[in-house]
Image (cartoon, helix red, strand yellow):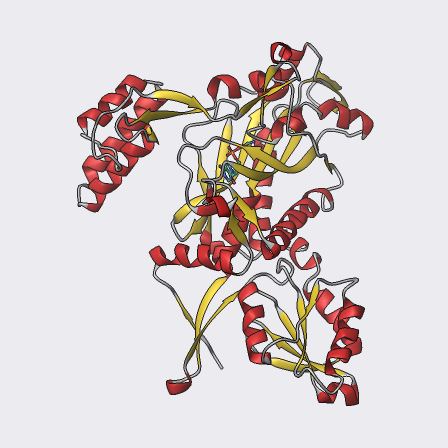
Length: 500
Ligand code: GAP
């Protein structure tokens, strides 16, 4: 039977996904018993499995599919000069403004953008476009007074107090700082890293030398990053504590565009391979380049709130290694003994260029969750029912199979437990015997379990079980002896990796 997929109203969809994520143990607000902490979230028992699977398949795609990419796990705290060299101390900020009456802080550019969106909604598209362009010009020129005048001229008021009693616009650094050292006089300021990339740059020579790596080669890392985002919203899309999956690819200067193109394509393929549909993914070239890049593109995903950045691919030149070399006074060079055809001599010493791929694990998690959330109508007439399930790629699903005895008697729980104990060493499986089998199917649909294994009286006679498939709800009878191979095949890393 063909089931009809219902497209829930876009604006209500995000709310449904957020409450689904909480109700079924994927994502909880942080320290919720104290009313939570804005833009900080905890992953629950299902969320951690899904997120770990996303991270694993990224790490494997990088380090297993490419024998010239290796991993590291650098510390969150780094020497403060790191952030001077990277440009984050001087340039990692957003323009912000406070309302003196409500004491609320806003991103000045977002206030103007919201005014432009209101104009557009009121049919004044040309005026809205002109306002956005003017804002872009002012930001480009670092003209904060100009941004302030724009807010005054547009008579933009604080949504809380309703007044236009604003402070001046100031740059607000997004890095969190803390003190290290036991005595106040000796303490020095250090930062929680705002990107994981710098842990890779400062270890470039350690890895190159100890791993005898030859250019081109890459270093991959997954880890926490922290940003004091002023506008923190849209669930795990913009968080103050989040995880990045970054890879720096070290190359010979002059070859960066070739590698940039290659990584763009490879990363888009990875997103498709984990089950995100091609029509919900697109590239967005940066017009205004970050201080470190000579080319940059985002891979955007169509979230329920629109197409938004999920991953950045940046050609970072020798900006980072060059600055680290200057500040640390330690050479960050590589000796390339390949022959340059133009001169007939080895390329010799140089500071490598870098192409970086940087994807947020939490944004990717959110994309996967939004894409998987499915509402469907089954049956006809009076038998019509609505069902909600997570259509996750089987390899990413938190639980691969649920082992379900159809009743709690006649030796069925014991038989089901035997199957569970046999499978659990290779596959993430659960055992459940509470409630009717229908309710247990529904519970597993809601968390995206691709296979439910029903153990019934026939199982005791012929050692076969029923597999119920999540998406089609179709059932098939298979021998217990084939279960392990069958589930492993459909949930193996290979199902994703061979498509990257
Ligand atoms: N090393 C380069 C870098 O950090 P970025 O574009 O600032 O570049 C890369 O960040 C990715 O990190 C983004 O595409 C996004 O997926 C993720 N990310 C950045 N800020 C985030 C935040 N506040 N919350 C969640 N994810 C974030």
